[in-house]
Image (tube, rainbow, N blue to C red; front, side):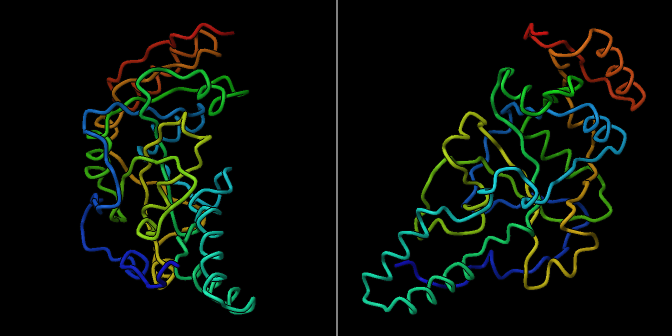
Length: 269
């Protein structure tokens, strides 16, 4: 049976103690080597938003399409129920204890903001289809783990917050010691393992953080980044027309960015 106790990451309210975005590295999170290549696939509209705002968007986890995002695995909940039943508790007592278990271990999905990247080194046809799809106009932005950290830290965002970064693990079960908010946020079901995801996230807390945040957490937020530090290469979607590459290059030039713009290695019309 899992002990019910409030862990530090559940109780700690949002505290702005820094003048710039600062990476926090709890033991629960695995951060790849700084030289690890990262990609983010996006539509032209989102790319234009990134370049013109010079800001990276963090989405509220409750708005993501995967309904299991930032949720305690059902297998873990079922095990907790079985343990309570084996302890000889009545049906009402089991339900009551299970409700408390879920309340204590609540990862505050609606107070978690995410930016998701892939650590796959090569282009992915599947990612182009998923993140660009019918729009045809889109790009893949390349950076590294170290550059992403620096871009956030040096972005001079007017609302500085701590941020977190962790490699996603693809599992169906979390043990007692793994039921921290960090573990839950960086766990997904195995059928998403093709993503090889790294996620960057911001945390707010039901105790105080949501009320104190100077923006609407439910809508996510843009975080200023040092764009010249972030973007090292831009790959143009394989589904678009050749002229689109020039449009992307112009957008980068107007933003005074010298990033490489290249065509996709995938030949698909």
